[in-house]
Image 1 (cartoon, rainbow, N blue to C red):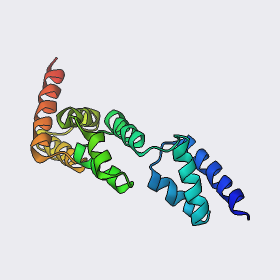
Image 2: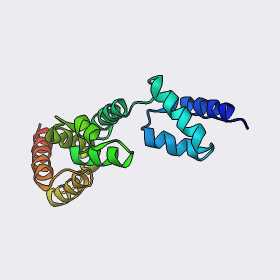
Image 3: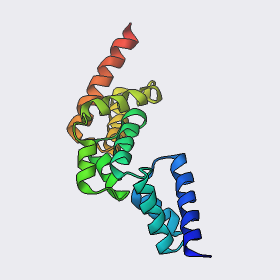
Length: 159
């Protein structure tokens, strides 16, 4: 297969892959490397970046927004996820800058309340606290969030 034809195929596969969801440069590079030669992958990735289809900073912002909106996590865990996807440290730091862990923990806790509606306080504290800590929130933030959600639950139950 001629190199330019292979590079074009890699570019087209890259475009299709990016149409499904945003990807980091590293993710796309690894994905294309499974099927194409190193030179074709490098050409395709460079062309995708040149045409602004591939941008690690935009990917990092998108990842943060998605996590904040749909699956709240701590700034620490989002930063770690970005680094694992090949995002440079400075870009990952900029993406999570200003993220409010308290608000994210509260949103995550609110999303979990229904599953814990019929449990006692001790079980509620343990399960919700563990859930929040698995999402990267500190012990203190998790405890404050558990207390807040429990108080709100009590108020709603008595109303």
